[in-house]
Image (tube, rainbow, N blue to C red; front, side, top):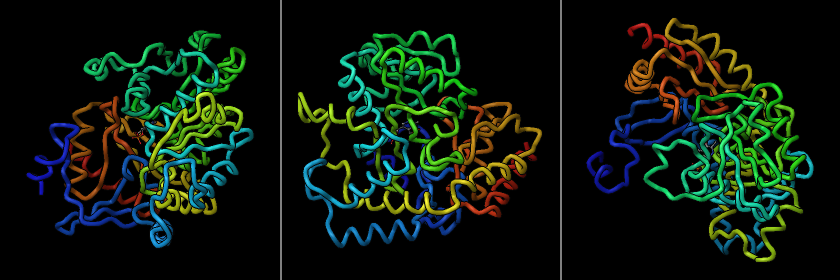
Amino acid sequence: MKTDFLKYQAQTTPHPLAMEISHAKGSYIYDTKGKAYLDFVAGVSACSLGHSHPKVVSAIKDQVDQYLHVMVYGEYIQTPALELSKLIAYHLPVPLEVTYLVNSGTEAIEGSLKLARRFTGRSEIIGAKNAYHGNTMGSLSLMDYDERKKPFLPLIPDIKHITFNLESDINKITEQTAAVILETIQGGAGFIEPTDDYLTKVQKRCNEVGAVFILDEIQPGIGRTGKLFGFENYNCQPDIVVTGKGLGGGLPIGAFTASKEMMDSLSDNPKLGHITTFGGNPVIAAAALAALKEITSSNLIAETLEKEKIIREQLQHKHIKEIRGRGLMLAAFTESAEITSEVILSAQKEGLILFWLLFEPKAIRITPPLTISNDEIIEGCRLIKSILDKI
Ligand SMILES: Cc1ncc(COP(=O)(O)O)c(C=O)c1O
């Protein structure tokens, strides 16, 4: 299988992990040799309810029996997409009530940028240094990582960068600015939380100059940080909230939500301001609706904070220098990139899935499913410590 994988599937790195998957259930992934792996990564924060959650699977099966794709997004009324959009609105503060469903996180980012430009009639977009918003041309343009951007230049113009958490940069947001886009918690950079009222101040400045404040909740959102949306932790409210990953219950999705007044600008003058064939796909929306119902009607969100406590208690070790993040969006830092890589690779051999962060080589990603049990957490942490003991 590995030879064919390398031959026929496009690769993202020269050294993929290339684990051969048989099946996955709950907090475990099984390879084709029957070995079980405890999953501390959850498909990079996407499988919030673990693998193949019965309510998600049942919603998918029910929908498959009704209809699959019937029409491009926005023309026909399809219950799963409508109910999902209504439930998102129910859980967001006014005036965030209209959702555009798309196919991936990065597409939702693109939609949010277009919406901000269309709504304000301005072009300048301000992003943060060390941010990650996805890999399409617009999202890539927001990144300030020259080494990764260079081969793809020229990207979209009129992008500026500020330093996340640096208050003196906030005045770079002006009447020229269409939008400021930030991750609520910077992910790839090392799970960096906003300092106390940084986001409140950015929001205030955006309001003063008429810029649209966009928060990328693709990773922290949908329950991972002790609240349904990460921004609820930081006393602020975006004009556009972008979600993805955990919203899909394991299927591909992206969404951006704004006020009706703002969102209406995408459908008029010119009409068809953003269009998609498969956005709001009924099977995916049914899975997302089941996942969102389960996450919001159970104790899972509150439990993320208890589980965070257990992880912080359990991962006391001389090689763990710091644990950043909140809830079940945690990054454990060792003193070197080499140790971090050794832990991640050894863990896989021993049946524990860990992973790297995009731009911070000393960090070990710990983003398990929200459904992981306390015992599973303790077992995973024990394995990490036993690997560190040997270093
Ligand atoms: C904060 C953030 N924004 C955007 C994206 C892009 O989402 P997708 O990979 O679904 O396009 C990601 C994915 O890792 C992300 O973590």
